[in-house]
Image (cartoon, rainbow, N blue to C red; front, side):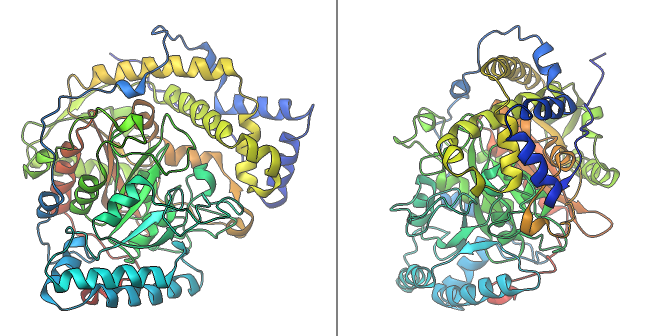
Length: 562
């Protein structure tokens, strides 16, 4: 009999407009801010964090993640071959672009021209989609013409040559400013690509521009008061999730089959889930962070969002690997995805913590339960487990990520506090109330959580939960202009995501259905260190067993999917 499941109810009210401005002012006023912040943290359950025992004693050394190295690195060609053609698939994969180029039906330059027009149309729609916030047409056409020539010579650089890819505006792309979702950062264009972007460029990808994001990644709705809300293509009245909002929207709306995201607390998996796409947060250190904004270094991960598991595999095989500019990417096992080729789930043990799994909206739980049965039908075994205390995990993650983001933005916050959106200012003001004692204690508890998680995976191969506790929240009037703070919604969206960030373990979100209004639902699967292949194995089985729906708002540039 395990411990009783408990989740501290978040009591904070939704704030927007004048109310949000007033609370920000109180939190930033000497003498008053301590009272307001103290009450807010009590409402969030922070006092119980300091009461929790940290018997492990030492802070977590997350770069100590270990896995046996097979010495086999999956090539991009092998990753591309994972794709099994599905005639009913309503959205294109990288392989669909490859086939069109190889047959001569269309050229990358024609796709680029269409993309420029489609991007403009998406941002001129009412309401605007705001997936892409910066695009340089001349740069895109130059890339495409070079790809034209390679295809003419039958010498593509990789299966991604000429395939459109979007880059989250948290990651450097040469020639573009990196605003990180703010109104003032990135005053100059990045002089060079981030390591991950350089790998995509070297593979011939058409880098179509910078994708929108929740400001500084300090939120998970995708509502950005500076660049506009990245809206859900399935219903633009609803949020896309974040913080890799534009990355998910650009894939779900058909602009690209693949996008680069970043994940410090669910920021790849949450928008992938809410937008009905696949999203992979690889193991910590699997993809170099060099060239990404250093926002929350101990929980940060780069990874892909895609319309198919095959494109996740392709992107991971291209971007993974050691980078001398990022010490945390060195000494990692080879990116071996051979487990993804298995085709069934025989021998795979899927852990489920029933009380946690069912702590979501009924339609979400039902769809995720049905997906588990699909995996069982393919040979998997369900094992009931007790996961580390989700409530304690939430508080440890909150203290960790807010403290690290506050440290990363200290100089800017001191000089330009008023330039940040109100929700970001509120979160930073709360973070300023945290002490070094609370941060250190959180890291000691993090080590305990990591040890418990490691023990959990001695008896299972994968841990399953819903990706989010609910489907996409509605964008309330004015929120896309003034911003909002809704800690209840934030908690429900992040409920299942944070354990993977604290431990550095890989996790994937797979689309598994839709609620009664047609909004997507995702299942999250978490694996052992560097076992992304096992997660992709599950994703392929799920993908073959369902029919995905095309989003209502569609801006695809592939001629067969217009």
